Amino acid sequence: QMDEAKEEADKLQDDFKKLEDYVKDLEESLKEEKAATDEIDEESEKLKEEADQLNDTIADQKEDMEKLADIIQDLERDVEEAAKGKEDLKDEVDELKHNVEEAAKDKEELKDLVEELKQDVEEVEKRKKYHCDSALIPLL
Image (spheres, rainbow, N blue to C red):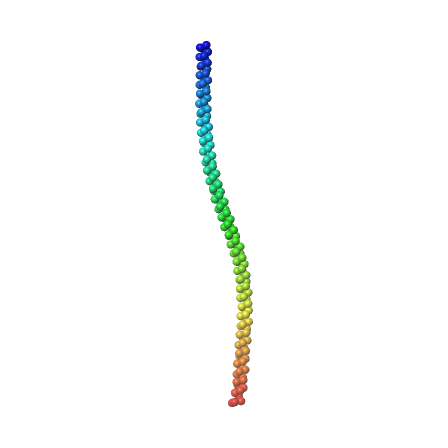
């Protein structure tokens, strides 16, 4: 019976040794899993930071695009106003051209009237001289 007990003790000791080795293997696997998990957590944190930076960049770009849209609207409004101003100026220029043409016509008419007035004055001067001469002749 002693031999059986010794064999049983040896077997139990072998089983215990196997269990210790198994526990050591499990502990080693657990350490490896923890290291892998820590590495994944680290990578995940880096990716989260990159995502946050990208979101910030996207928000900044969206804000810049909104500012550009406002600038474009202002420029379009300025172009419309400039086009309207150009039309107004064109109308004013056309009106001024018309006024210059009318003034040129008026100038010609005035020139003709001045010429007629000069002729009328000459005629009056001639009549005046004639009447003066006619009045003087009997006196002489």
